[in-house]
Image (cartoon, rainbow, N blue to C red):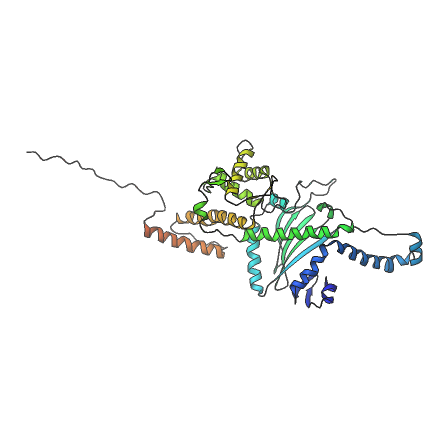
Length: 392
């Protein structure tokens, strides 16, 4: 990309293989988009031919002998790395954004989510021999004191997010072996490989953004438990006070990153895993009914006539906010209000802990002001009197 940027007159600064400053980001993005076109494989093949036949093969065969023999190389693509850089004007803002993403997303992304995120449906198979099975999971690594790397592994595919330089936040999609993509390895498939990796980075960023920042539109809390209609069918509301409803919302959110959508069976499997239920306790028929509830509330959309479903980005943010509000706001605050005073402050005291403690103290004072108790009220002793009519 660097030669193309120079020919286009775009000023840039690089640190290793990363653009840390760009004079025309839109122009550089247009140049990068050409890598996913069919013509990119032809241009890349010309560069390799020029290097192979003039700088390497000439030591064994001169140009005339090459033409007479008809000897030609066939090229394959084995490993590809695709990156997307976000440039910040203030380095401190970048650090705060990335730290928040790491803290929130690593607890909300799981292996089934990653399987859908990568577009791979089969479980990773153990390799023959003594080799360990492919890595699967979410990890946070700190190779240096000032560098945190958020990695999501699934077999031969890896997604990474880390800071590069002072003001660059980088997202990468790496295929360690292109057979994991199912596109083939021949050079003519280079554009398809780049397009798939680019789509993975987009889904990765969208998934991180949705689980990191949520919002609840006005009236959602009041309208969510109310019944509604889906077509001409009357459908019940969604009561998040029930474990089944919360599990259905959490399962749909976990499947939101699926590139091809998810089925009713996928939702049933995920709900059973979240709620710890057996197959007889939560059937596919119940999952279909819960899915209709989500569709009626426009939290899930159907892909045309196909029996697959997707979660729009705004709906994913709403579901994230609903779950976080109940599990991480209302629950901890109400539990903390039962304790009038706290003990000794722990050694690790984060900004979130400070906010919880401040809200707890204010809520205790508010409950006392409006007459709410932290526990069951003690029954007061009452004296009953019986009135009698006066005698004549």
